[in-house]
Length: 250
Image (cartoon, rainbow, N blue to C red; front, side, top):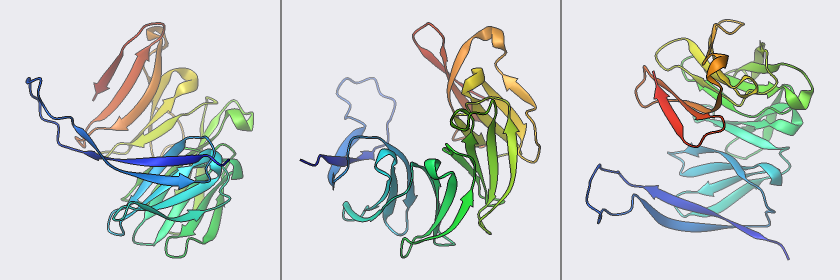
């Protein structure tokens, strides 16, 4: 019997700082959307089409990209046979969707009107997370490393206006988990999981300028993301061998 997975929509309410024990819960279940025919596996990334009332969802182990109608809370389309889909970039102005297909070693470009694939931009195997610069329209794709059996990873710079790869930036660790761009400057922050550190580099450069923290601090980096304040970035990290975590912003 085929298993049925469901996608749960949750509304995020404004969370005020209160001391009363009778405060309303900040999350409210809005709808449950059945997704029949999917086997077990995670949903890796999302990309919203706000004006079009669509939500694009990658079913990594199912090799599918699902399109949900956020007005009716229904599954309206499934893109089949996408090899290990990970991150998605939706370009509303181009009516195109850039899907990182990790096992296809490619960024695949789809028309979001007919859901047909056009261009395929080749990268190394195990391509996964991305960062996007809306000023240049460049997309930075993490790929290579462990699955490529190399001691280094790559950050591929993709020109999304012309659907072509401009260059590869070599990072000397076989595991880069994520990358985020500084909103108020030219820096790029990389989660160097293989080195238990965060790397800092100029987006126009070709090498790391610095890593944080120093090795003697023995931390395991988990996630790095831009904060709501444009001049800041945040780092979440775990102390090795100890419970608890800290979130640092700069």
